[in-house]
Amino acid sequence: MSWPLQQLLHRNHRLRHVLRAAPVMAMLIAAQALAPAQALAQEKVRPQVFTCEPEWAALVLELMPQAQVFWATTALQDPHHIEARPALIAQMRKADLVVCTGAGIEEGWLPALQQRAANPKVQDGALGMFYAAQTVTLIDPRAATLNPFAGDIHPGGNPHLHADPQRLATVARALVQRLQQLWPAQAPELAQRHADFDRRWASRMASWRDRARPLQGQTVAAQHSTFAYWWRWLGMQQTMDLEPKPGLPPTPSHLQSLLQGWKLQPPVAVVVAAHQDPRAGRWLVDHAQPRRPLVVMPATVVEPSRPHALEHWFDEMIDALLKAASASPTSPAPPAKG
Ligand SMILES: [Zn+2]
Image (cartoon, rainbow, N blue to C red):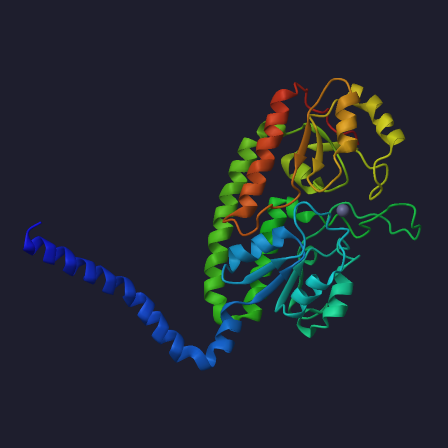
């Protein structure tokens, strides 16, 4: 190697080294300058957000990616039945904001967490406590019952509203307003992020409607009212519930009774949520004629920190249903009477 070339490479190497080090140096200097105000700045820039379900974690991260978001449940857990364990209490204690569904879905554990965490910022009525169900109308309200054996849960309406893309957009609008109230310094950035999300979401909804056209008018058997909003949005009808009564687990006699209706109007598939015991659904597809597939779908996003997690969840649900529909030659359901 000739000397000038060697020198050039050496100089280039040094130059690269300096260039690479420059941003690090600048960050170190900036960090030193900001050190006294660091605690305050951290609080402003990285809010601690506790979410009850992963869908709200995904939504918060869409609107405020710098937030430190914790989700209390996963797609493999039933959000109706969670233990108020110490790790959850500790997370709620340090939260600046709690985002939950409400409408009774967390009534077995959330009040206990709020009480034990004793964090005034996230008690009911405080700005830091956000219930998604309070921002939309709910479907299927039932007459409240005092009979503990009736299995009649969700008297205020179906709380599984996140499976409705339209309502999700409404929740996002209300949530961004709450975030702006809590962190006014971030308001313009939040508005921008929400506008981006809203625009993208509208175009996703249009493409989902388009793709899901073959599902319109089809019937489905499912367990619980977990996907009730989703069926409605798709124009599908849940004609069978594996639960004998809302909130009660499937029983052999109830499953047996479903076989009759199945013959008259076979659903396109049996759908159970990933957190539900699949055995009842499995039994049904093994015993019913004509044969239909069992589809196991997560009832929420699986990995909330994945970019556009909510979109992926809806994409995958449509994929799974279209696949089932193409395997099940059904005629569309007759129009509902009355
Ligand atoms: Zn439920």
